[in-house]
Length: 209
Image (cartoon, rainbow, N blue to C red; front, side, top):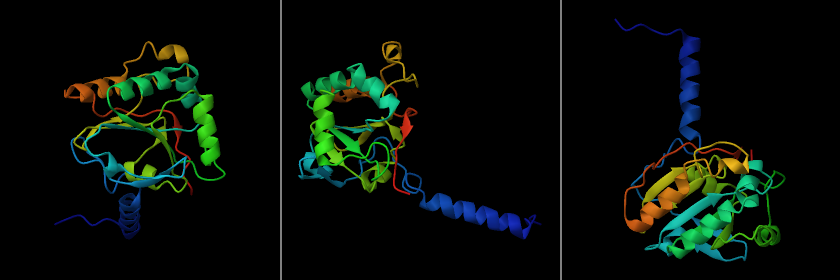
């Protein structure tokens, strides 16, 4: 005969299951090899972009927050800019995404986003403004940085950290396994990504509450 749980435990479990069902990134988990979710966003120049507009091109999504020390590590060292330019030479469209909500660290309007790009000497194809977090929640973006690589056929090829060492020290970049770089090169060469899913690290994305 099945053992019955006390009512208060049953209620707690039901509430927990209900909360998990609505949490962004858990209800519709992303899977490597499956189509990357389409989205519509507005860039820092006021232009609308649909991910589906980029069909046939490989894409990199990079979540950013200029106030985050982990992001600063990547940009102050020049490593993120180098990766952006290398990806562009391989035919990738690099989309930097700011999902911080108004009033939160990392929130930028169009003018500030363009100023940050110029000041950092960054080289994304476009910067997408996502203050409501719609794109971020769709992809389950957790940290800044958080990297997603999409193949030419529109399927997700990589999601995770920029590299393997979760620190704010610029000297660690040279010591780490370059997960994002490996993924970009593998997709460009039509080869399997060595580590398709890794743990992202950095500051939490500052979504609206």
